[in-house]
Image (cartoon, rainbow, N blue to C red; front, side):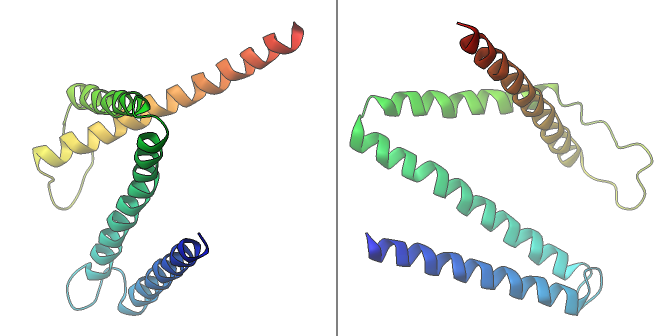
Length: 148
């Protein structure tokens, strides 16, 4: 177990070092200048995608392994949760309008980019509303539990 902790610690240190190097390079090269227009910004966004992917893997994979080890039937609940997330994304995509942005100057985004942007906005609204409802419902539940 101690070796596994060392691996995780060294991995985190390596990710932090790479992130700091990319950040320093971006400031040195200039975020909107450099060899290629916006090269530093593109590298930083690419690294962001890598970090988000690693974070998702770090959350999902241990959950799957623990579920399989403890109780294989709990894997069904995990699959239902993933399917629920997929349905939520599909709903957000269906309701995304994909209309052009008002007052946008510069490059015109494609219809697919506009649809994806609207989907992400819809997901943000849905998840934000669910978070507020969960907070309020949780507080009401705690208040009701305390009165009994």
